[in-house]
Image 1 (tube, rainbow, N blue to C red):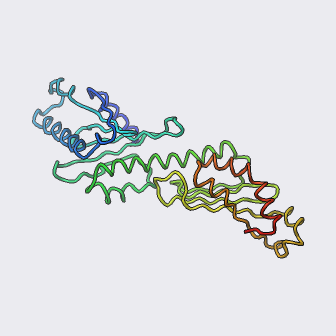
Image 2 (image 1 turned 120 degrees about the vertical axis):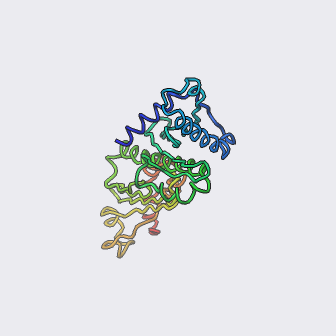
Image 3 (image 1 turned 180 degrees about the vertical axis):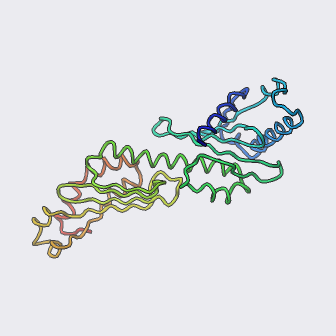
Amino acid sequence: MIFERLQREFEAARASQSQEINLDGEQWNDGLLATVREQVHMEADRKTTSGDANDMPTSHFQEKVTYRVGNKVICCLEGTRIGILYETSFAGEPCELYHCVLESKSFLEKMTVLEHTIPFFLPIREVENDLLSSNAMRFIDHIGELLQAYVDRREQVRLVKELYGNQIGELYHSLPYHMIEFVLEDSDCKVTVSLRYPDLVSVLPTRVKVLAWPMHQYKKSHTSSAGAMGSQPIPARLSYAEDALRTMSLPEAYAEIVLNLQQALQQMFQGGSPC
């Protein structure tokens, strides 16, 4: 309900604008954000003094401007509110839209987050406390980075399940997709993959662990060399797989892991050194 209401309000606000200006690099700065804040307060004051928005001359509406900065659209909403629309995408295809409404009670007072449609498991309140009062532009940018990274991680997992779901035995992920674990079932071994993204704006994991657990075929054929492995197999760490996961998207890394898995297993287990 909140999404539908805000989406209608954002669409109406954008429809009333005379132009949408694309900003690049240094054009998006604190000075521009201050201009937007000034505009919303002038608009609110004008409507207060006029008593009725319908009595305002149409020439005033033609002066309204919407700003686009990368995947963000910034516009003036009714009252003393600034709306930010975040457009997310994956592999060039559009995904969800998210909204964030900032309230500026006074041009001299700090802004606050009035309402939003950002997923509850992303730390918007923490970012608000850390950045909004001291660097509002950085706050707006950081929320966009959080949203795009979340969508990217989620879509990577979705694509892996779609392409290789019949090869994956188990798959677990946290709500923000900053913890991902899955099991690759192979006839000769079981491969467990653990991914951690401590930085929520990252689309590649920084903590990766891939372990290959020998199954009954390996234990039978290598009883003499493996010794105690027969009852409690010792896992082997797949360094090539960990390197792939740190540098490639999850679907690309998965394909790389499967392509070289048999050769890596033969080199490790037949060489008698599982580590």
